[in-house]
Image 1 (spheres, helix red, strand yellow):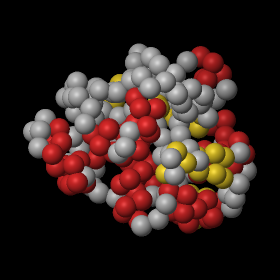
Image 2: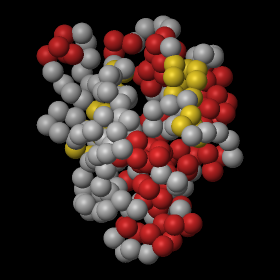
Image 3: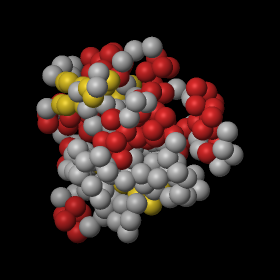
Length: 224
């Protein structure tokens, strides 16, 4: 995985025709997990399956990475949040090229096997694993991931995910709206009376496409 301050132009040298744009060269690796690349993208106004939906259009393009990277710059990188499955697809490429394995192979070795998570599937689009929305898990096994996060990356005495990386990923990197902030692929918040009543003072959530959130909070703080 490249350093978070690495320019995307260094990570995708095959697209140097696009990256010749000095404004585009300001986009770094960190802008992908925080969804602050500043590129035009719309997954909100049109349903998935519509050609006007940016993620659907990306999967229909001859080259999905070029499709993401060639979008018009509409904001300064790092200054404006825009939900983008395309940003997560770029992250998937960083990982698979870096480790020389598929997402499922790598996740199985580093995460699922050590946690005895066995019933998982990673769906594909046009033959490629979908980093943005392809992982399928049963609720109880997904809850194990929540418990891992609550335990600062540890599972049954073993450090599965570096604690410092988790702490960094939960930092507020972008403002979504009046309720939500965003970290490294995490939605942060909201804080309201309902969640306080069940003992959660901070919510960390990984939403799906329809914002159906498996919240991670004190509610999960029990043995699984």
